[in-house]
Image (cartoon, rainbow, N blue to C red; front, side):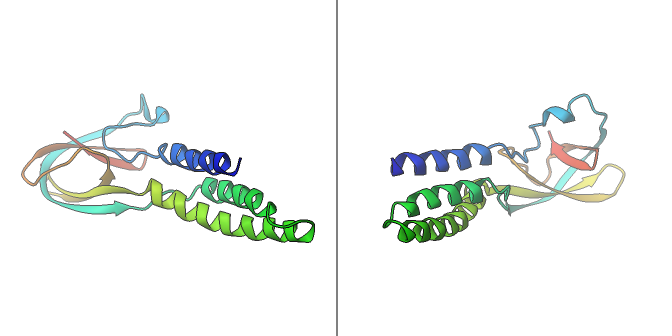
Length: 149
């Protein structure tokens, strides 16, 4: 039973962590049919960066619940209550760290020299990799900017 609970908790963190996407070629549904400004330019430089993982609280809650359940199996009476409390705190801390770790991703800081002479830098995740000298489009709107081919 304990193994099943830990497996379910880990699966929930992994599934929910996979919901965040910072790629230049993936859009959220609410971004569809929205006007964007399009500029063109050339990639000047690219630097790999790490995008920190999410901290939605799902990992903390799942870890706390699972830790509390696991801890309550220690001892009887007051010992079980104390075990549940300690288990919930330790599980919550571990779940928080696990969520951040599994949702962390590699991204790129892309510096683009626009055709109008301005230089901009955009940080984004995803599997689309850019190289200096490459011609790109820069899409901007609703407070977001992304680089695409």
